[in-house]
Length: 462
Image 1: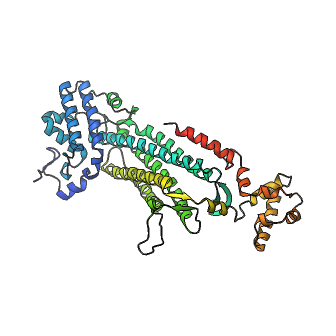
Image 2 (image 1 turned 135 degrees about the horizontal axis):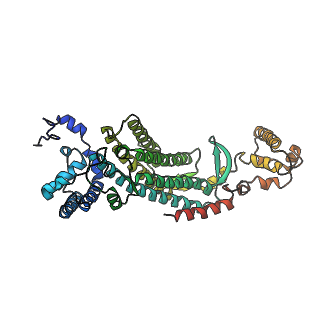
């Protein structure tokens, strides 16, 4: 039978069982247990270091907390809802192990600065793991791009054929997105890595603590300069959720392209059996489940960002119970981003093949070289806007005649404008159309090869 507990002598009765369940966070904040133990060990060391407790008591607390950690890892310590939250659960078990000295652990500390510390320690680790996953994702993109510098693929604007591009150039666009994600998380990390420990409930403490001592033990870069801000700040969580949402935007955009590319209408890629599923009634189907799930899961992360913003928008200083709602969204976003990065990395590395013959054909069956005809005339002194109008009329008459630009005879070209010569045919071949775009950052093969060198250099930065 669970013992009825009151908060203090201020309370005459225990919580209603339903309210206790409603109030409890142990079901999800158990995720923080190892971070809670680590933070508590640093706090115990600081209490001993400043003479608030004896060194013997500090050592007993440290070792007792380590025993709690090992019991949890071995499955021997599994607190239930009666513990309310991970912080009470750890302290209660610690006191069972070391006796009354365990009750001294919470000296000069509140759950408010404690949970803030735990969350930051957790998120700090997760950011580093996600950044490594981004590096893995980028490496796969570069690996494939290096093999496809001269593979051409139709480029689109408004989902209409625009101009052919190097497939490597297309993939490197996602590399650059991931690079920004990697850098953005580094920036977020700098604001996650600030210690609120020692801020107390909201106003600091009367004990002679040393906040910088615990910050150094826990490898924080700094401490909060204002105790009210320290316990109530969740900007770092919002920033992380924003960065996570942008990562999901990038994964979802590529997911959408893969879904299109795998369709019969595009046929740019073939999905391998290891990363696709079938239909329950249509035996011919091969469904792009991985990119579809990534596209769908993106909304979950967006939702957590919106929820966090709504939680914070009306909170007066300092800590409010609303902030308990931050953790599930953070945990789920972390898990979702990590799962999607892993799945998309595997999909691109092992789960699909580009259909090179189909791509080669695709870049020859449209008017994506029309801009190059206008550029051809402009390079020979015709004002570009005039050249643009000339080519627009050529495209219109060619469509009516059922021809592509490559099908026009030289006499027809010269009737359009005397500046055209026999070299027009080379100028409008897909390969030349791509190679000619040699401006910095363009799809020209020279630029793409240099971009790959630059990408490898960026990957070497840890």
